[in-house]
Image (tube, rainbow, N blue to C red; front, side, top):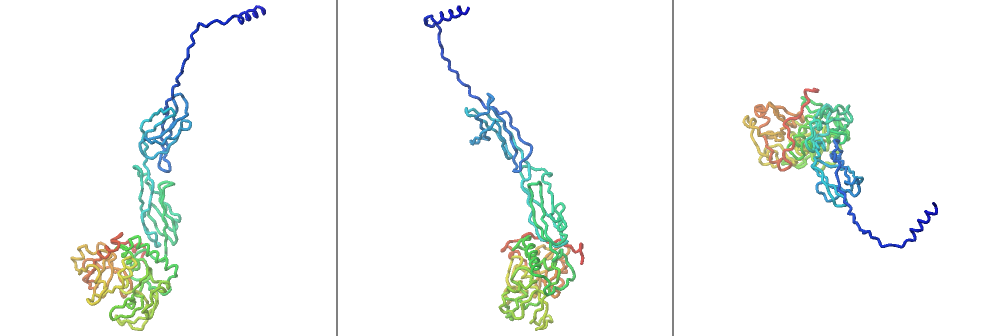
Amino acid sequence: MLFCGYAMTQRNQNRPNRPSTEVQTSLTVTKIKPVPRIISVSVAEELNADFTRNVAIECRNDDGTTDGLYYSYNGDSDRKRLEGGKAVLALPKGSYIITVTNDSGKAVQSDEFTINVDAVTKITIDKTDTYMNVGMTGTLTTAFETIGNPTDSEKSVKWNSSAPKTVSVKDGVITALKAGTATITASVSDSISDSIEITVTDLLRAPKITATKPLLQPGQYSEAEGSMIDAVLESRVNTAGYGTRAGVVAAARFIPLEFNYKIPYFYENGRLDPQPERPYCDGEGRFYHKGLYLTHSKIDILDKKGILFGPATWGEPLTNWEDAFGLIPGAKYANGMTCSGFVSWCLYNGGVPLGDVGAGDTPGYDDEYSDFGERVWLDEEVMRSGILQVGDLIGCDGHIAIIAGFDENNIYIAEALGKGIVMEVRERYREVWQCGDYTYAMLMGDIYAKHNGKGNVTEMWKDYSAENNQ
């Protein structure tokens, strides 16, 4: 059998080649290009810190591959590669259509989908006075920046005090408990908050009217304490509006309502600019530097030209050289301010300086307060007309003061009289003009308009007399 097999093999190999009768054909196969497919587009429920939502897309070619895939959205020509057929986009509020392409030039689009965002994006504590006296309360308010329409719950504010034994806070109401500082924070989430620092002092009192105060003594305050009191005054004025009607009113209210001691009346030998018949001055009655004259750092920088007996801080003894009102020339009296000196101080600290102005109503004299603003003579009709405002001046020949408040029945007048700097209270419709102490008012609207206008005017302050009588 081996032989036969071998023979057959040999026989076949020894056959001559014969022409083939078979027809040979050549076939060309065209490769089909894959088409991209969008498998899924899903929008996350959780909101990102930058107020976007994650959008996860998954794609593949219809042949099952994920090579050469790109995406863009809303017609953007900037394509980005889909690695492994997947991508996560962080998109803000809006409507979108995803476009997926591949290297073959094929494209497919998703259905339009919408990303909804309703959120608070920023919280701001509204401007407030950041200085408080022990015993004072205040209400902080906030403003929001939002996307969409967040719910009341999403706008719910959480309040916190870094030092609750110094300043407590509840629902935005802050209470000054003791001297120190505290940071008050308002937040709507861990990442969205605003803070302010509140400074509390016990050098001043919660605003109130008292019949008497102890007289300010020389050296009552240290330089640091004097600086703190000045800072509180400045904050009061700036919160009301520096250079405005409200800023001047804030300065006028400060000494009679918040300062713990009586600043005495000192008659008139304090003018740096001499008036007729008064060619000399001491520079104490009228002041040209901001703040209260409680420490020697203030008087050390006074222009001492023409100073005869001073300088002296408020409360320090100063030689008088006037003989009016029973005063004895050459005698020493506690230094303080006159009526027009106090009004000048209020205007200067409030940001509306009118210069060295007197209280008289003498036709031959210039620069008296009766020369500023529009004069109205007081009677019941005027008092009921509503034309008088806080910040207007009120007085008579030889006396000038500032209207510091109105309520339903009374007018409150900040002034320097023989009993010192006080807040005088008079029945507003009849008594105030019938008493004879006030015969006219100077409407100061045009004066304030030349500076910064009205400011944050309030007809009354928050009074603490009933809460903490002393």
